[in-house]
Figure 1 (tube, rainbow, N blue to C red):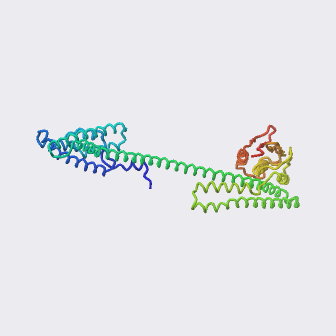
Figure 2: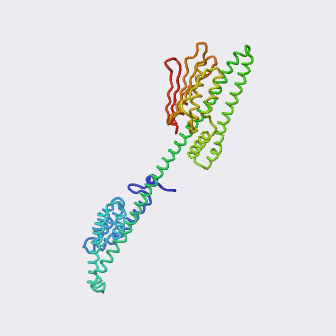
Figure 3: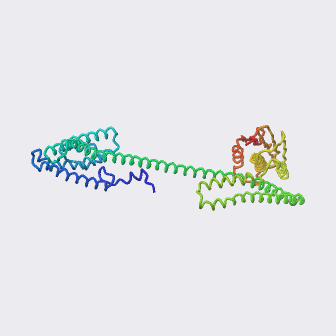
Length: 435
């Protein structure tokens, strides 16, 4: 499991400036060792300086305990170590202080300057100390050993902690950069997941709306004709039995056609069972988009209505007692399935609205085949005073015009509807031929 930057910041549990308790315990231990070391070395310093040994011990202990604040003020710790280097004490503090300074986020020029001062200070002290030891006879070596010992000791005490600190600091910055990248990647993945879910929900809503439009067109038109024929059947049942039988047959045909189209629609919906079973192993967002696309392709590639069936559609309305006048301009040609289905549904829904709201009104259906588009218009005259849509008791949900407009606009077309000056109603639509 990856530890992100937020988790790393939340893991701070140490007192004061320490991030963790173990870091505080480590610094306390190092400061104690440094204080003890400097205290022992303070005895010799007090002897050489001619001051009481207790003063040297206290001075050494206080100076060595400065290592406690190495994480908070590494520059101060290194300066203290450099300051007490002439007293030949604070070696542990110098080594740990240089390491902490090099591993910190301070500018490189400051680190290099303090490291150079520490190197020079150690070099001078060791040069003097080795020279004094040779002068006392403690070391029986040539003069060449003095610079060699001074340089070797100074570099050996300064270079390793400095290089190790630089390495640890670079590694620490790299880990911090990786944590930030992990945080950024996690946020991006979360945002992508949210967007994918939004797209899936949008696709599901679009598919539900499209299927609802299809079912509305199928049911509204067929059932409206069935209700009109049933009302006519009720009116002529006793006066004209033959016409009543004819109307009853038409009602039966309409019902069978409506059931057939509904079965086709339900078959498309049942095809989504495989997609629903796939949700167990595939993310919901991908399944939602795939299922919606599959259902859309299944309906669009199916045997839907086309413009060649307009004569049959108008004949059904004429059989229901509507006077319909069809006029076609231009030569018909093959259009994409979506274009033909949309044009057919617009005419179908417009005729359904005439049955509902203007029963008995004469209706004009105009179809124009143009070079780059196909236009259609359904206009009805005012209904006769004797006829009334209420006599058939046809309900209206107000979704017909909205559904037609959505269909046409989705293909890049233009849809206009509204009452005419003569008191009728007009529905007009223009659809690009290559939509």
